[in-house]
Length: 169
Image (cartoon, rainbow, N blue to C red):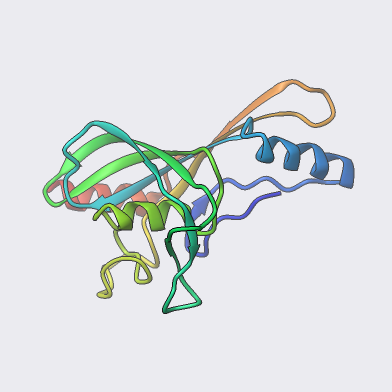
């Protein structure tokens, strides 16, 4: 029903039949399907929470990348600082839209690329981290058959918790 980036851990929704797929896709379209991520971003945020409302489209010079560009598709990411560390911030992101690489592009565009993100952030690898430090933590949606509210949560993986311990030292 939706995708997560390569090297992003956590939850995704897969439909078992076409009717479920259509119902869940409709929730994605009307923004009633809620997706919450946790990540570690470079630098310290001045505010405790904020919103990045910036259109995303293909990068003008590198067609393999996305970027904040005039005329791109609308994209909104709400973020909140969960913990602050020297040089990094552990944040929660809630997506209002679902563009390709949205969190990675938005945070990089405001000067806070994700730890380990070789595409939109620092090019040097982080020991013990394969890819960006991004985890799909929670999903909330209406069950396509019963209409009941469903909330799923996936705890932070061990490697993510270990990175938090390391940067907290």
